[in-house]
Length: 181
Image (cartoon, rainbow, N blue to C red; front, side):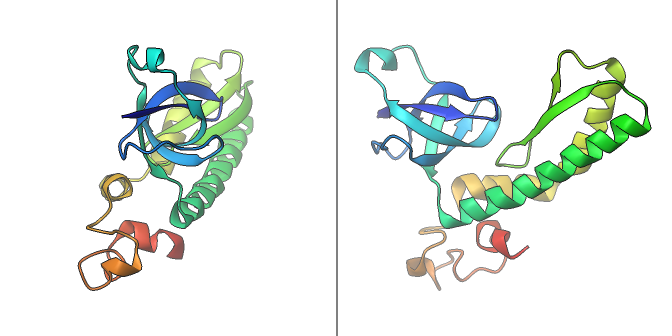
């Protein structure tokens, strides 16, 4: 197994991740990882020393970022910015004194995190929980996140898969249709 140090998350967490395909990824390679929080985009910092492998891992590198992943990331960033604006507006409307610093949307759409300067008041916490429920989608998105992780069949997303049940020929594949929305 190939172990790598990967930087991930808005705040730049660093963890040890094992590549499920056993590939050695170069420094700077953007990858899709399964972290303790869910599916996220990460950047490979380096391969780990053999001695580090014994300490365990923080998750898995599922695959390198592809074109579809880049497009989906851009779409999620658009929603992330909309969530930031909505939260800022609600804080002002409800006269809640809290400084919203940023919003992070995980790659699988399952997690939306609001970051405040200092400890936000309880009213801000309940407000962000409501916003998170608004911006996270339902069961359909859970199916979408499974497809992101697993693909929809052999060769998912490739020309070779066309006509064999792969997403190149399947109109219901979430990966293939992510960019069209």
